[in-house]
Image (tube, rainbow, N blue to C red; front, side, top):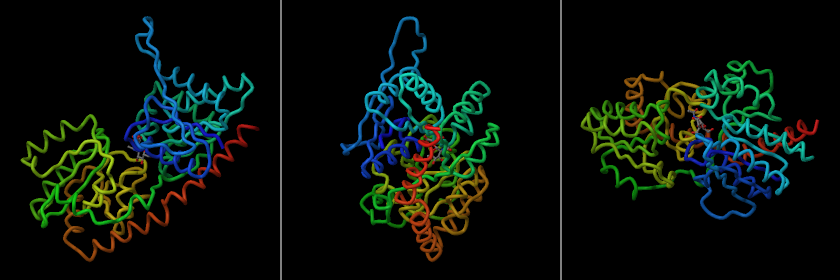
Length: 378
Ligand code: GMT
């Protein structure tokens, strides 16, 4: 198949899933055309069958707000036509479902049929899309897609309910390369953050308010009263400065390492003991999945799709979002009980291998593409 993948190029989960999906499809012989405003973060080196098309936004004196959406639509159209694409797979509904719809219909006028698949990732549905000004357009573009997938059962149901959509939405979970993300010794990295006697907590996100990164620092404060421990924060975003300020205010600046955006995630995860995900909204939790693949147990909130990933009392613990005391208690419980920790760590890896391994999920996307192609032809 010839597939156009439209995504955000950033370190966020939707871009990561889109890129890893495209790369894996290319390895299986499909021709993949990534379309975005910059090279996706995980598209690091040349891979056979993979092409990248950069969207350039035109400035014009009349345009106070130059339109990325129109430039993107034009680029999608161009790639459909010249590369003879079968499918456009948009990741994150806004604006990709709408631009896909528009490109499809212009292409149709030119005699070319293409199927539009939309994957819903999270805040496109739970936050941004719910804005009354966006809602009708998001609903319309979901209904008009030839196929729609969501990354958790929670998100599928939320979409049907909140947008009053009468259409099947297929749940296809996030996945992880379990060879790249696997348990291995990473003492070399660990030594950079902690002394021999200290445990390491880790959190990875794009530091938006919904991630509640401040809670990880407050959890550290509580755990530190009982146990020598450090916190590693990976990623960057709007809340980072506030988090740095909080760490200073609590006198924890020497205990928290703010690493910013990093590529060596398997190493950083393996240098840690426990992953914290205290989110206020989380449709699945890709970063926690990558940690679990490395055998790192997770203490998370109970929101959204997190319970579909993190099984309470097996792969980690879940608590109400905002319940920092409970999360700190769970963290302490795991880090002070070696026997339990070993069992949980093993459970994490097993759960990932059984449910979220790349080779299990890719065939689900391929089967779904066939369905969407048939729907587009009908
Ligand atoms: O929806 C978002 O916030 C954007 C997206 C991203 O680009 O970071 O994250 C979402 O997609 C991931 C991949 O499918 C999911 O694992 C994350 O749970 C989800 N984030 C939220 O729901 C907050």
